[in-house]
Image (cartoon, helix red, strand yellow):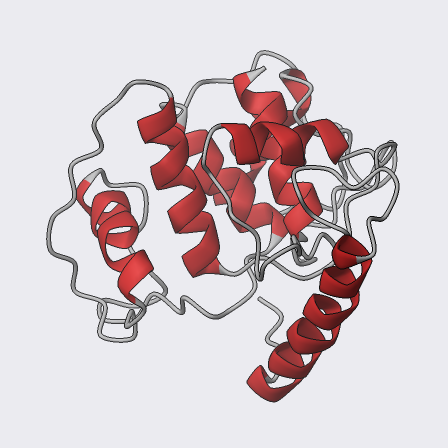
Length: 206
């Protein structure tokens, strides 16, 4: 997985938050879900509006969703946990062995993922909650959440070569959750942005 220096993530987030909060305060036309950085005609607009309505996200700051920022493993855990609750389930959390999960809002989601067998972390004691999640690993996590279904169609993306990702990505393509980054590429090592994560989850439930 690609790693990003935490200082760069911090400064990028602060700059994005300042810009979109200013846009929201100024009453930007087309702002969606109270977010000044989500226009009314973006490919992810409906997905973000749905996430807000289902209480899956409140953004990264007041008035800011941060669609172009990478989504972290800890954030994805929280999204899936809230998604499960929004669909009428009662996700039960338990203890987890990951010593690097310190954020309070991530404790229950990560415990739930671990208890359900949806993740084993990156090591027996590490989950890497601040690390951007790759597109290939996101596919596997969503596929496991869906019950690890089979995929009748073949894998259309030639750049997905890791065995543990192949069925998951093929299933996403078959279910029209993804069309890849091109007709023949999925970019499994690329980071998932918050806009892409919202879109994948929205297409999954839709």
